[in-house]
Image (cartoon, rainbow, N blue to C red; front, side, top):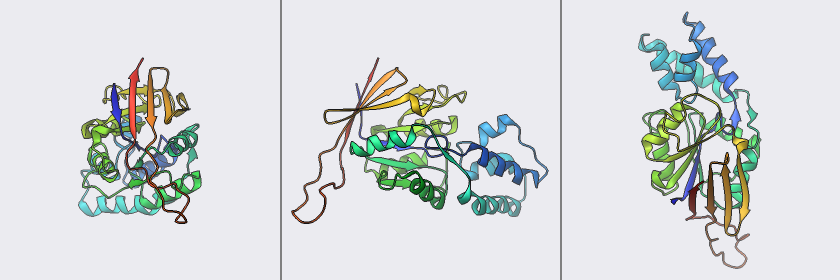
Length: 254
């Protein structure tokens, strides 16, 4: 029996599908420098990784001015990247929000893009904390961002469950000391340290139970997310749905 007190969500590949736009952006920039990253390099050093990691991996031999120019191009184009919602993601986050589970969004996306996506998905108010591009010294696959996400929920990483889709993101979660549910068909998720895997976000199903919500992870595990008690609100001061300081999550393998 394991217990968790919060959920840390990746963005790209988990809540939204933006991979085509991201790959197209990096390939366009790389072409400007006469480079043509192959699919293996894209999977290893682009998807699920911080832009600084990608620049170091794909452009590390360039002069510093050129590397900074690559990052400038990414910063200018990234906030407007196209995306579509991942099937089942909005409903799943909404179910945990309604169950008062503390959640943070931990992403290599810029703050501008993260805010735009959350707004357009109708998930405003679902996340009590966010970590975005540039807020930690190192991005994924380094563990810094997940450690900061847990800290912003006032939790230890070991008390958090991470939802990821890329080996780089799973490695970050694992190195931070968090358990993870890795969604999708990308090779290497289990090898990167995923605690559980599911073929898609839609394979992680939520059902209300007394005091919380139960997640079934692709038929392999049952995750029971228990609601935190509501904070008492003085009469006339609001709706009564205040912050949720402490939620307990139990995981039972089947």
